[in-house]
Length: 144
Image 1 (spheres, rainbow, N blue to C red):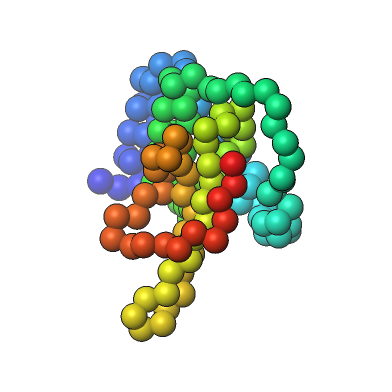
Image 2: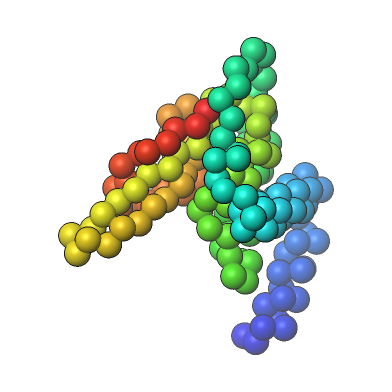
């Protein structure tokens, strides 16, 4: 299948989605793109805030599923892709009212001394985005 056919197929699939899913995809694409550009100019520390949250408001389960779905779809289908950090920051921002959501960053060093880092999101202590089954990362940041 050539690139034009894939693009046409993607557009057809997009238009067949319900309005809620279309909105989630567009919203996720905008936030992913913004974080991808912003991280070029600002260090990560500008994103982590240690403010106290007084009200506990959570997103609906439907919204949570839609945003995770949209970020996953866009992360897999977008040319040049979005890093795990960009995806995790985008989820954290899009679901900022969900205080059961936590962004984790971890590091790993392989047997041949290769260093790697990874970001993932948990909800109620369950990984919902960025699970790496074959790699174990030592958490260095947990941001609620």
